[in-house]
Amino acid sequence: MKETPEREIIPQESYNYTEWQRKKFDGISPEDFNAAAVAYAKENPLRANS
Image 1: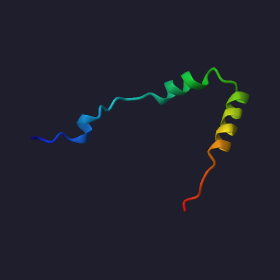
Image 2: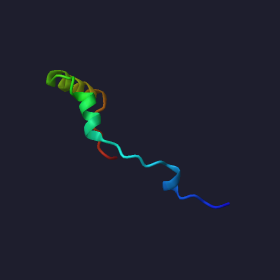
Image 3: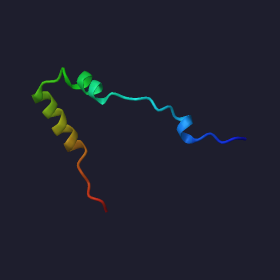
Image 4: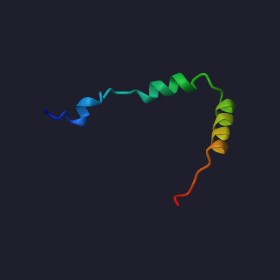
């Protein structure tokens, strides 16, 4: 059986992160964005490598 390279198995579609960011964040006020970021940081504190 011929092996298929991994890159051929997983489709490599281009993704426009700028478009994603605009769709996600354009409707959010700076205050709401900040509140969400602060809440996320409290729920997910940075951990130093052990």
